[in-house]
Image (cartoon, rainbow, N blue to C red):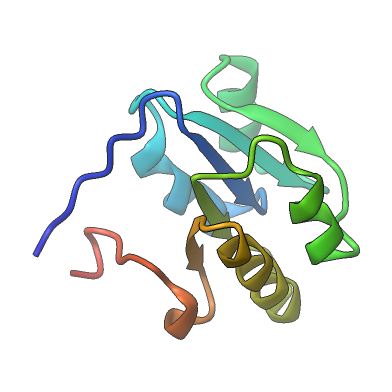
Amino acid sequence: MAIKLKLEGKTVIVIGGGQKAYQLMAGFIDKGAIIWVISRDFIGVVQRLGEAGKVALLRTEIKDAEAFVDSLNPKPYVLLAATDDSSLNLELAKAAKRYGSLVYAIDNPSLRDFALSSEV
């Protein structure tokens, strides 16, 4: 069963700026969502999306997932945890779920609230 989310005006937070993060966020671009990509580094294509105004980039390192998610305002409608740190992805996903966010953790299928079309 395929489900389409109405993303117009909704906040999508992508944690991670590498190839996997880009592959995840690609399906959300041009859907009317407000997309923030948060990472200590960004691959070229993600950097260019930021420069083109398709996504907002925030270069930072997240040390405390719970405090980070608590600080987000508004809370994300969708949070994509796509870092190279499995424990950080786990903590981000758990913290976002407490606020009712839909979560996709790249390395933990049991925490995912949805599948992407390439996985169905």
